[in-house]
Every structure is written in structure tokens, then in C-alpha cells.
Image (cartoon, rainbow, N blue to C red):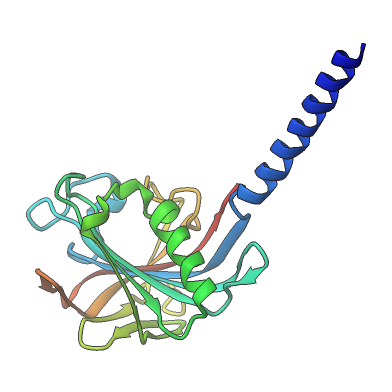
Length: 226
């Protein structure tokens, strides 16, 4: 009888310990939403958005700017933060690379949270080995108006996107509605505002390009841990 009570006590204690450990080590609940804009390799009207091959050497390199307007990582607010991810969407995992720029003015806990979200979740599809992931905490200047989106990172990135006025209604941008776009299909709004990158220049490590005059678009996003 005593042995049974002892085993029961041990069992209950272990269950309680497992519960506490699970609570301690569980990943934080997080969500981010805001505005996204991008420049890429393709000519304006990027065929990748329609499931066709890119217009330049079957290669699609992007600079993607995420301006977080509302968000949290556990108890920590991420509102007002900007993260830029730059990668080759068409590269094989064994050759791919990725660069993350995170605003240096973010608090340390915010930097860690943003890197976790973007490296392990938002860009997890890229499957880039850790040795080819570059993370820099740098000054980021980002601005947005209804027709103009711009991001500048020192002398490494300038992305300046102007949205295209529609001919039917010049007060609205040219749009892709009810998009057919597998990447971030659920996280991006169904409507993409199409534009042209009047300037898109990047230089980091052994990666360098000038995609002035090529494709760009803008939309809104929402990513969650659920």
C-alpha cells in the first residue's frame, strides 16, 4: 500500500514537472502585420506571380521589406520595426544564401525575436545553411506613401519602388487581384499593387546587382505562430 502511494506521488510530481518544463520551454506566441514591398530581377509585371519563369536567366532575386505596424513576440512589442530579407528564390538549397537587415535601434530582445521570426519562419522555405546566412543590425531608412515605397541601408541597398497608375482609374494602382502566388500565399493580401523599381541596387559580400527599372510590388502581410 505504501509502495503504491509512493509511486503515485512520484508520478504526480513528474507530471507536474513536465508541465512546468513545457511551459518554460514552449515557443513564444507571436504575430506580425504591416506593409510589404519588394523589388526583384524580373521586368515589371513579374511573370513569377503567374507561375511562369523569371524574365532574366530563370533567376528571381528579391529584396523584400517588411514594415511591421502591429506585432508582438510574447510580451514584447514589435510595432514600428523594419526587417529586410534578400535572397534568390530560384536557387537550390545547397547554393542559396540570404541576407537579413534588422534595424540597429531595436532593443536586444526585439532583435532576437525578429531574427527568430524571419529566419526560422518567414524565410524558412529557403532552407539556407547557417554558414550562408548573413545577419546585420544596421540603420534602416524606410518610407511609404500611397504611390511610393523606399528603403535604404547605408551603401548596401537602395530600393525605390513607384506604383503604376492604372489606365482605367488613374487614382488606383495597377493591381493583381486574387493572386496566384504560392510564396506567402496565406500571409499576403489577395491584392498586389504593382510597380516599378526606379532604383534597386544591392551590394553585400559577393552579391551585387543593379536592377533599376525592373519589377516591384506592394501589399500587406500578416504572419502568426499559430
